[in-house]
Length: 413
Image (tube, rainbow, N blue to C red; front, side):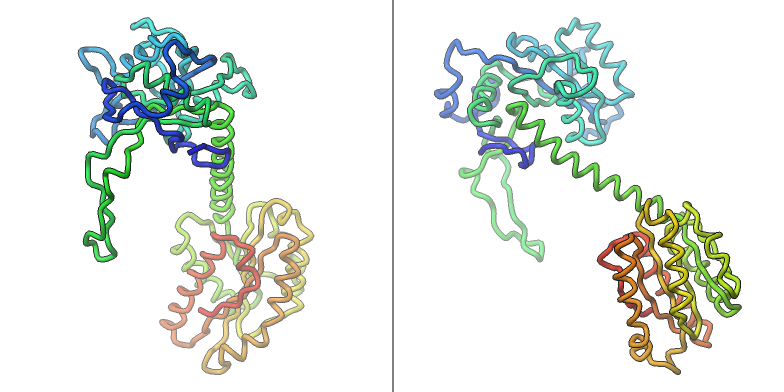
């Protein structure tokens, strides 16, 4: 299997088997015949060891790679095994910032050579990428030479033979990616929906992927850039959404609206734990709309009770569009219409509010996400509270998601 630029980089490529001394029970594969002939030596090879683990699986405070075996840290044995391979030019170890000094002490005490350090990421994936970036010539302050082939190996696996390393490297040069494999020892099962055994894999037809793995550097580096770039974008989007969802402004005009707005504000506080929710009462002329359009708030709840004034809504949205807010972030506006469902059926009122959809389509072009929400303005306080609670849940979802696909929705609480 070849590893393309958009493939999952952590998966092994062309599978090769190791020698019996490396723990593999497979006979010699086609790779040894094709690439790793006696006397052959690859050029421009480096190794990356992700060593950012915290020891959770072992249940110990000391990370596994720093645990001592015969009074020597385990990772030191792994480095020694790689240093013995003269054609591995550089070895990059990715460790957490808090363990950086400890790793430097290990390198100095045990006389390790050709070792460079990179700061590990929050996951193994990011730690490997950090090691790759240390080898990439397109990175600022890069002091290492970009290799043709890079080996990825576990920091806690010191029993690796040069023969296995050579074969995965030569296979990677030919196929783009390669990795060691091992026969399945444990039975792998597939459970049915009821939890009972559906079927078991035929162990004779499957293999377990092992370290080391090797890749053409340009292939694996591009793959990690593609995957990590998308992940970073998703993470950034999530953080921005969370940040701008923390400020919500409830806008009202009449005394009835102030009362409902206050109740809605209190319910929203419980629904959105960390959010700051303020309420603003407009004067009858609506002349102070600009006063509360600050860069702190990107979510507005416009409350009307027993009426729906298109002109006032349009005036508010125009002022919002003319402000700088939609240029910075997507702005959520929820028009909350409170009416007594016993007097006006929701379906009938929905028909009279169809203008919201047309308006939403218009303002969405300018990054304003408009939705409508009907709430039962019952004289029964308990029923009103229940309607407000349901409405708050809907509002919270609209504010958090900020999805253009939800703009123009007419919802009923």
